[in-house]
Image 1 (cartoon, rainbow, N blue to C red):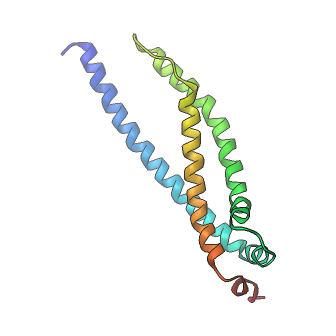
Image 2: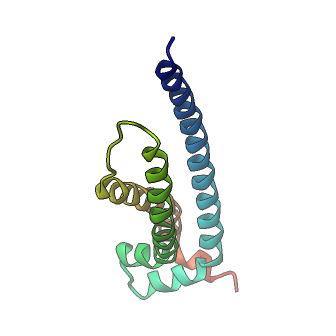
Image 3: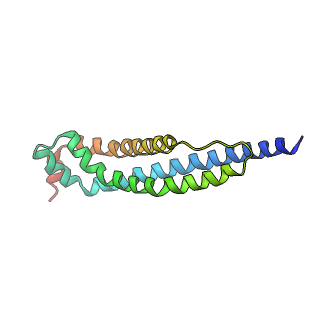
Length: 140
């Protein structure tokens, strides 16, 4: 085997390891987001009940509940995209034949992250909105 073949094997192994760690990190982040949204819904059950009684729509409530999470995710994307670009640019510059990174890759990744966040938060939001508002308001 020549040295370029060995480097290709090493890069493939590195790619597999990084994919495994990335998938693990994404699953752990989703579990944390799921737990945090569950805790937030429990804390805001009375507010959700009052808003439902006053006539708030499903989409209005979902926007209110997911707004804080979306702001945090957007801040994280704004911090992570330049860092990822610099790291990937440095890594790709070490190859003899390398390609330039496209902006749409980062935009697509950001949209996927926002979609996962909305899906995770909306699971608890739908449960909270399906509950009878009298039940949450009666406890006091």
